[in-house]
Image 1 (cartoon, rainbow over the protein chains, first blue to last red):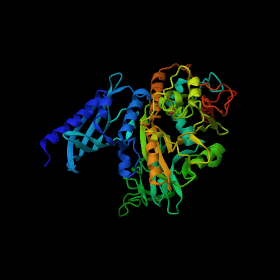
Image 2: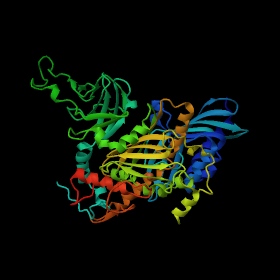
Image 3: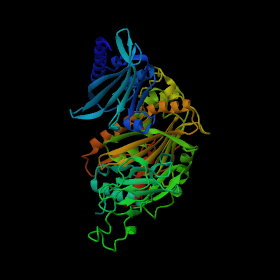
Image 4: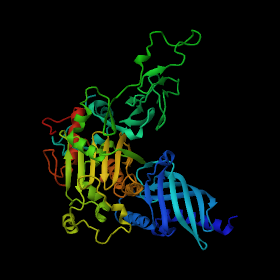
Length: 158
Length: 418
Ligand SMILES: [Fe+2]
């Protein structure tokens, strides 16, 4: 039986996750991951075919930090704002007292610099959430992109 | 309709913007380029290794089905039923003995021959086709197919030169280097870019933009215009190779050359530099070698990231870009992981490639309404002669692209450079 406090803490984690990305708080978004984290974005096609290629692969938090520094200082990309809708947050398993397998669905809408919006990406998060005391963070996060032909380009995290 | 293009210059250092936006021109491109005398990249042999394996793709905007037949030979056909024009095969890839159109169940063997028509003789003598209907006349349209080092190419024309001549020694050399050993497919990335397909073919031939647009390269010292390198083309200047040698410049050279443009590499270092590690795999020390084949593909090495890119036009305003990543069958787990890590650099979200989509989309958008006499400027590395350069800041191969494009389209100016 999973404690109700933990369930609420996980829900808060997903809310914070979407809110950081939607409000361009990418540095705060980093704080939602533990140091030994893995973050990847995978096209559904490769999952289906059993192939390992990702769209983004950060094997530790430093790689994730590098991504964000690069986005801030070295990359040029489509001017946009994000809106994440995250739903069906579901605790699939308790690996041990501190780690839980969690899945959720996401839809990500993007608005361009002239106010035109579109559904940019949708899919599933397959995550491991680690509890340090009562604070949950992502130990791993795999974004499986259902619409795997990426519109335009991929810049900010999903 | 005959095409009439008023070139301001016969060396293609000016290209009218309307050529990126005209629907009639697009239709001619499909006929004269993609279904003309060119060879197009179809896929890799490693994607259809077994008898009965198939894959669907596009050449220009024509749907293509590629099969490996019983004898191991590869056949490519237009994926359009000879009966009512429906796509015969609706899957991206798979394995089968026969392809059957779902509409009226006409079926085709792996070479594209029509082998079955339901109710051809009717039911109890009623209905069916006339006796003079010959299945042999109604197969799927067959392409010429040729393989080179495990890459499958197709051509719509019986008159096109042999594949090897089409590639020429430059492309053959690059492909042979990249495909020096048996490969294994690591996976795919795909994106839709909202711009004309030619903008991407140009982008791949534009060495000038590389270290300016893709700031990551310079910021983190991966690739700089001051490195030893250059561009090579085939004799007809339709294909190109851009290359650079690892560690062939230093920070002070770079600072001087980039002038006002800031070099961040002193203050910015990756916290995890494994992304940039270069393990020399070939006899030379090139850490960047990207070739582009007219009209629809690119074959690339950057450090240890290996891939093909395929361009599929989707009307005048968009194209799909498909990245197929591979390693070698003798890679150990560590090397495979290294390649997978380095593909952070490429693809729709690549640290050194995401900008291309944006550059193409803003160029397409902003040039849309230009007058017929308004042209883009292509003369970095000089005007006039189209030839190889042993330096990196140039866009000469773009002019090579246009010279062959104009020849195929029958729109060369008098005294055109080739
Ligand atoms: Fe580029």
